[in-house]
Image (cartoon, rainbow, N blue to C red; front, side, top):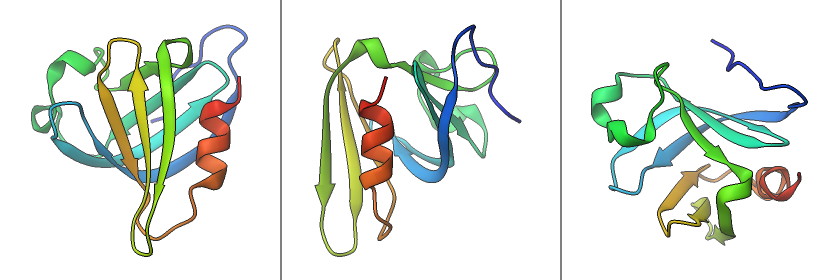
Length: 110
């Protein structure tokens, strides 16, 4: 399922990635980064993550305008993007050993 885009919204890229919600629950799914939002669609049931971050389609939506900080955390076996929102909630996307530079650039790009 491709996420529905808003008017004037364009897709930058999509990644298969691990997500950790603010409540520390994790999911594997697809992250689509657009010029306006981050759209994460888990591959499994919504009961594994806090329903407060889901919309009706099971999609986790982070508006880029609500992002306070984006930090890349890199070690030999783990490459993560840590996103702090304006409400101080923290969302982490873990790409394993893969390079995250393009993902970080896409998140920072409006």
